Image (tube, rainbow, N blue to C red):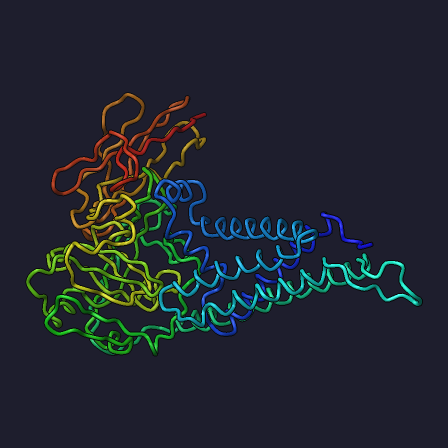
Amino acid sequence: MTISPSRSYGALAGLLTGALATTVGMLLAAITNVVSPIDAVGSTFIDHTPRWLKEWAIRSFGTNDKTVLRLGIVAVLALAAVAIGIVAVRRPWATWVGFAVFGVVGAVAAVRRPGETIGAALPSIVGALVGALVLHRMVQPRPIPVPGESQAPLGWDRRRFLLSAGAAGAAAVVAGATARGVDQARTNDVVAKTNEPLPTSGSVQTLAPIDAGATVDPAIPFVTAAGDFYRIDTALSFPRVDAAKWALDITGLVDRPLRVTYAELLAMPQVERVVTLCCVSNEVGGEYVGNAVWRGVLLADLLDKVGIKPGAEQVFSTSIDGWTCGFPVEVARDGRDAMIAVGMNGATLPLEHGYPARLVVPGLYGYVSATKWLRMIELTTWDRQGYWVPLGWSKLGPVKTQSRIDVPRNDAKVTAGPQKIAGVAWAQHRGIAKVEVKVDDGPWQETRLATDVSNDAWRQWVLDWNATAGTHTVEVRATDKTGATQPATRSDVAPDGATGHHTIRVHVG
């Protein structure tokens, strides 16, 4: 007679060994400095996610979308491991087949990530093997040691199972914590580099002090702190770059291909510019827009060095993690301050915003221009398509004129009497000429504009309002320096940015 564990014990065994397989893979990946199996699978999922799902994730979770994805992957792995454990109680082959699938999926996803080699498959394979061996030992009947002759030569011992389960769980916790520690230490080393000041030697066209008149309300900073600047990208984890080994390649339809190291980039003539960046996924009135002081090398200067061949239509850039985008060559040569940025707000470019170098292109949404963790620039034709274009987004992506009410907030409660309505407006590379506000069904009232720092930076505005009791609707619109006023018609963010007037409700008591 053979005594086997119940399905509930099989489920527990599957869950614990699945966790052990995953954390062993994470630990080995951290030690060997290759992509984690979780990140590899998650990044592959992101790459193949349809546009509607990505839009929904950004709307629903904002900058927490990657955390939600990680939790989702862990939940799916946990359910799959539980299922393997339950089936393995009666069918031993399920242990090996189930964990083989775990290993193959993780290995293939890891090897196919940009910059990885066949060695990236090892963590997933080893983790799956460890998980399979431990699960087999936990659920399969074995001889039970007894003082005398056993009446049940094959059996399953609950005490031995619980001891094995405790050991597997503890090992998973230790492996996971160690992997996290190793990974964090490596990230901390890079962050420490970003805390080093940018060199003061060399030619840097610094920015004049920003006029105090650029800010109309203390609650609305003109310059967005790096920690508050929005982050929308496809990277599940930050590329950890050794700047001493990093280099930017400029190639394609050029006369003289060029490789530039980080030290060489820092030694080149640089400029500081105030530029507003915004995400194409920014809803009307949304938070995915920020204004910063960027320091870097003008892209036009580098393109002059390499020489652009006839037939080049697109500046196509690739990040260290494989993300791509492209914009017309003319944009880099029309006089705007498109740059390869190495600094942000007077400090070295933070890791989360693209260290060691990124592209900043005024007047274009980030999805066609703002490549972080920059690795390569190619001059090419429109035959190449950036990451988002095949998913249905426009290939050009010029920023639309927009405005936002920041004070008061939507559904705010204020007292009757003198109040201020204030906010920001932006139309990069065109500039803001006028901002108007309408309260309820009243006329459009022109606001007082703050100092105009540059056409590439947002402009703050304020309106003095004599608030009367009741609930009021406040609406804003902006006009750029070409004379175009933003339309009132609401449209979705896809395929090339949202339109419409930001409108809020204010309760006056």
